[in-house]
Length: 169
Image 1: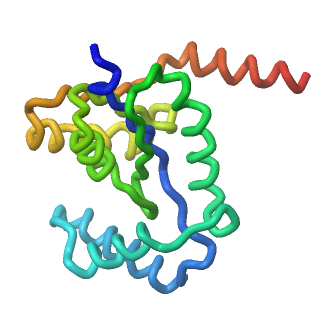
Image 2 (image 1 turned 45 degrees about the horizontal axis):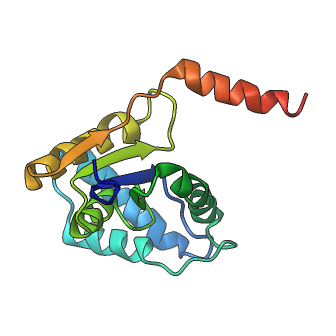
């Protein structure tokens, strides 16, 4: 496979910037809870609030999570043999998974692997939201192979964490 045709999206949770207005966070979370309870699509008001928080200006001090995920991405990228690479966030930060995939497709990626930083089973983002979004993306882009690298092999995760622990023993 041509490495230029391969893309990787690293998906992190996303964090709320420290300087983002708390009342807008509360309103966004309330609208999201109402939507999910009713099984409805996102309202225009929720969409606008979601867009506002995702596009809020960030620095490492106002959003250390974003800075941390970007640092991880910078370590991963050279290990991917020239594959195109993008970072995405489940919530509160941009780009979204859909935006990151569309960007890689625009750059001619034909095989895209999505991997989450959320390693453990049981999370709604990794087990439900990302797979649902992947199905929507597959329907919209049938000429692109989209793979979700999930679930993680818990033996490998346990080994990585145990090896890390040993550095401190």
